[in-house]
Image (cartoon, rainbow, N blue to C red):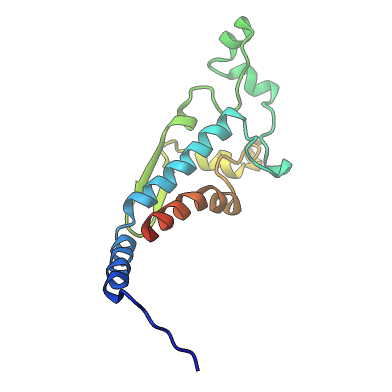
Length: 155
């Protein structure tokens, strides 16, 4: 036979009530998690796809044609500056909108061609350049955010 005796039952009940209330108000933690993903995306742009652990997901170099027609291409070539992949105007890198509520969060690009680069388009000879983390990477990125949240609730 197992016996369980809870002392300070009122204190335990209050703590459980605090935890339950905390779990009802997840908008701020969901927002923090999506901002963590956004930081990862910005770092992925800085590393030109190098945040991906799988070599098949790292970004392919720009084609000679792309280099010749880029807006910043002429200036960059003349100045000797490094021409960055997917960063000609900066719109694809910077125009992400985070949205959060109690049920979850999302990050959406305001650039209509973001999906084309994410998936690649064979008929346009546009290689896949994965901007977003994989599902597994995403889980690892946000895990510390939620672990900290739970730890704070349990204090």
